[in-house]
Length: 314
Ligand code: UDP
Ligand code: MG
Image (cartoon, rainbow, N blue to C red):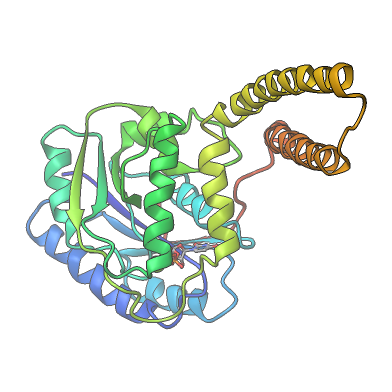
């Protein structure tokens, strides 16, 4: 029987944690009793520098129930780093990552296990609909997926970070030494046989989202700039286009100068200078963004730092 590790990244989740603990424990016991997974399977919370009572709640349950374990990070590293810490620091045969707020349906884990038993190495949890999202989140998400597709980035539509992976897939993931993490685009690069499991994502039942707009924009930009060089190509392309347009404009200016004398309009001049300075600034900015990524990558700083571990028995 295979050892399953259920990894839950957790940042200031004291309101929802008691319910999460109950739900996931019930699920784990059901799977163990049905002999679908080994009794040594674990529920692993990764405490991502919570400032509320999350760590205390997790520590208490770990001392009461040996199915629970904890990886406590030294500060807040972000959702992606926390997930990676869970997969790196615990040894298991199968890993599943799921948000601690239970917005993703934990019952899907049974279906995911079936897919793994059928020979898949990666099973993606995919949201059926986005009815529970605000209009803004729904629209921006759809536009973002379309944009990624246009830029040639391969990600599973409507899949976030609820997924199951075999040990083999996780070991392969470790070969990607990226500092700018965007797991949902890295994991399809791992390859192997994969499948999708569909579920309805519910509203958050307690606490608030830990992904405010600036954090969401940063993650979204990581998705584009880590996996696509198309924005850089667009800069080059726009450079050529602008040169071509300038050449036509130059012909027009020369014609005006020779035919009608030099009555060059102030307005057109200012407009051109403004537009082209804007385009140049944007182009420099895009190049700078990629340069910044290289800057971060070469430093090879750790993606997470473990402060303490509870009940981790590898
Ligand atoms: N999370 C984390 N570190 C962070 C932000 C979030 O570990 O810096 C966890 C959070 O506790 C939750 C999951 O990542 O379990 C997803 O966050 P959230 O539910 O707030 O995101 P949303 O569902 O609103 O996109
Ligand atoms: Mg959530």
